[in-house]
Length: 283
Image (tube, rainbow, N blue to C red; front, top):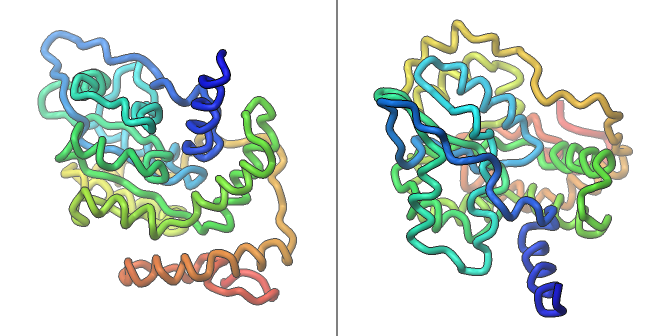
């Protein structure tokens, strides 16, 4: 690799928040289209956020009988990751649509949690799937940060330096700017905001809400095992000290206040960032 190529790759990696360069290519393969099925833009796209239960929620959505995904298409397509340099062309729209095959009357979609944090993605997604319903799962940013550190610690193959991991991990929990960027190109009523903590506390209610948002029969949620475990790690979780947790809560306090102003209808009282004292997280 030439010196110029190395610089370009380093810039790309920084813009992707320190993520491994392998994420620059789409995951999986375009759908193999059975006879009678149709290909087109996704009906829904999950865009955020990493380490927030999105794999669990995506699998629950795909338990609905009217949602389909072919075996070659993963949960996270990562289609837009590589276009940070402006190399997008309209020909890419058809390539993206190729991942979404479904029989008539069914819905198809994907959930790549990094889409919301990557500033170039919303505008491209709007061009490729203007009518898609967008899903955002938010988690207490302190807990999301801790979970991200756990992932990094247990996957040494990731090409992150400790500083890049810390910086990228922290920024991913700054939700207000990410949502504002999303809302500049998509109407707010085309985006559902889910709180991980509410989904854990009452998954069936939140799944019904999700199905209604996607235009699906919400009664299907009553027949789904909402407590199934997915993507469960067997490695030791990183434990934050009270001082570390309080420091992160203080660091996120202003960002959290901005989020509350932007979304007055959501309840953030379960989040560590609801308090900043050393006394620990809110109940």
